[in-house]
Length: 200
Image (cartoon, helix red, strand yellow):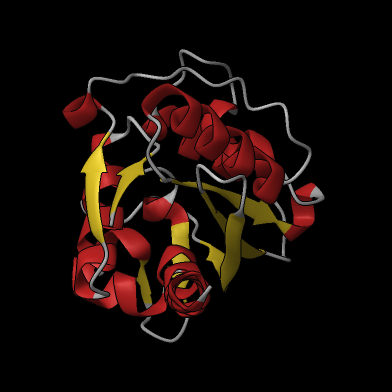
């Protein structure tokens, strides 16, 4: 069975594809099936936004669709930017600008705890959904470090490795990241679902 990845972010596509293919899940991009679906992320939670995106791509393609919604939640910022992570500072703000805004908000803060969170949803043509979530805890660095990753990776310091996510290799990041954790949980739930469908 082939699944459509419900994202138009090339870096996220590459990360999702790499992790899912390692789990034995075959995926294609929206572009590969001639669909570019714009979804207004109106959900109050990551899970709600992931479901909105998966359902929209399913309707557009007729194929099972996998979507995720992820964000950075900073304790001292009352969980912000949270579900607004991709739009923090406005639609025209780039990744570097969003990182700068977080660092500015954190000036003088001694509590720098933060976590990344991911929710994944797979929508099937029969109306079923398979969902999973994952998190990764760390702190906000005092300045951007590293060239890898995307989004807030340069300012998210993963204490166990003593590096920001942007300093980790893709393999190191996949092993510990919120998205990697969510995808591993998702694999188990998806395998269980497909097994039950085959028995029905």
